[in-house]
Length: 261
Image (cartoon, one colour):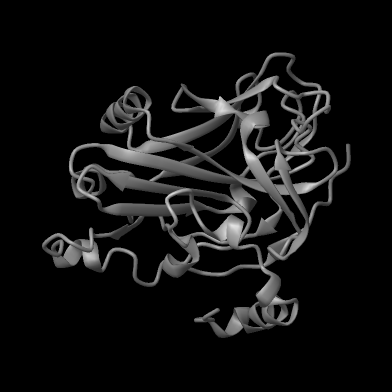
């Protein structure tokens, strides 16, 4: 782990002492095999997106946990995120320059969520009830996702499972290579340069969601695009892409759940 800012040295030290050797490789590694922590993403917390373009370029972004939804979707916060489907968070910054870097389309898209008390594990009351929508496009069922239980610093403390379980902090990856889904999502970004993540519940307002736990880290700033990694076998991208991600990563404070059901 590399600490760039003096004011977060203590947080980095805690993470190291807590047992980096037992940190979850599953949560750090996308379904494509890429370690997102190498470009500044945290091991758990927030929403991490890894997009691989048709040209092999990779775009990685992380939406901070502190900006995400917490509560029941009829009375939680942020207020604007309430409803069904209910909004988890909105990742901005996917502008025309970023889309161009991807070569005109997606080869794959992987999205990581950290959720406390999701109740979509086997036998939980929302088992098979909830779907993930990204810009209104169905991205899969929350009960089908392989997840790993960790503490709020990303250290593995329990077994892997499917679904985001009751009273457990789970982290898991949604991922697709489906050309229809990817084409629709890419087209939506051409209209609005942001990703809106939502939960669609077949029996809404029955569960308390907390997406704010984990490491409160972000690798995107207002007015700047996500980190872009050019394909290793291609001619290097222009300097603007090579420098786009510098200085964006900041490991913040760990947020622990303060709300109850």
